[in-house]
Length: 249
Image (cartoon, rainbow, N blue to C red):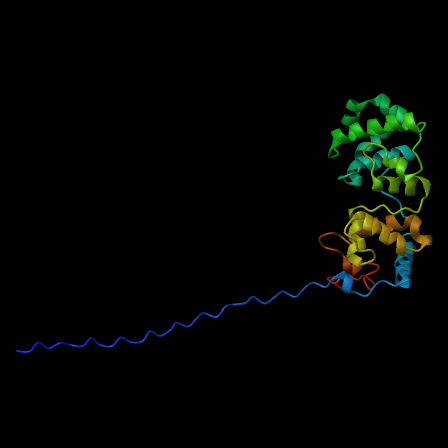
């Protein structure tokens, strides 16, 4: 009997699998850049500071002091600390040491006891004693009246010099702390990557008649209205002029 050979059944052609569609995330809308906003006009800048002046004609710094030396010490102590915290420590300190000689006589160890509630108090105590000695040896015991000379003192930088020159000697300087830096950038008045950029930018645009008090107005505005995390746009004096893209009014 002949052997029957069966032919293998033809294979079904493989059906190509459908490729899953790549899911492309929708790009988030880019935040508006202050550079793309309309620049401030001189009239608008004048209006801003006119409003600040009307609301608070004689703004005062919140660091307590009795003379240029105690102001200098208070500003040096205020680095990375609050004005309220510094004032709490210096009220008693300045009763016993309000001159460079009295501060030297007090000594670093006893000074630390007065300011130990302030951050970095050991380093600051060392700097205050050193700057007191330098004031006596190089400047006749008086606070110098130039930025370069003040910056030569231990613990004193550009911001310290600007505060002292403005508050003690009436110079038209712009001290840029964290509040002024934030307000300058957020409002678009003087955007800058560094405090010096903001300082120079503000000096260019603020009319001379407002420069004596300008840094106080900006500090107070940043401290109590243009807050870092949740700015109070609804009560802001300049909310109609502010260039901040995310303002809430």
